[in-house]
Image 1: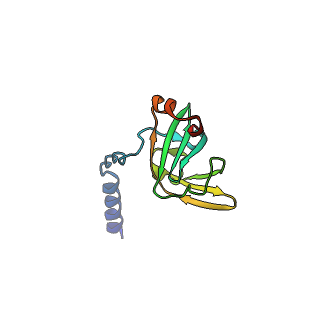
Image 2: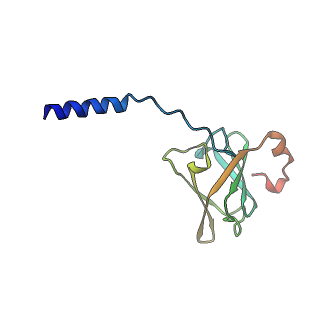
Length: 131
């Protein structure tokens, strides 16, 4: 019995002393800066696959969806968001579960990518597309 406990303890110690794996680089098209869900201020629907989102201190992001989940939505329709990883820190598209409420229906959206727009790109947006 003592031998089994010693082997288990040694195996546990060896498992905890394994060096940490390096963090994976961000996926192509993924934004390298993060924001918190509590920093989201507004959104505008650009087309059936694109949203412009304002987060934080006037940062504007372009969110591209993998499908046309926004086809029947307007900019006035609420977004229903929840963190996918348990934290409200959003760094990659997979960190956020997004749905659009249109009337009484919720349409799930899969975010393919989000990109922070430069100040020049934000200034060039027509007023109807600024969040």
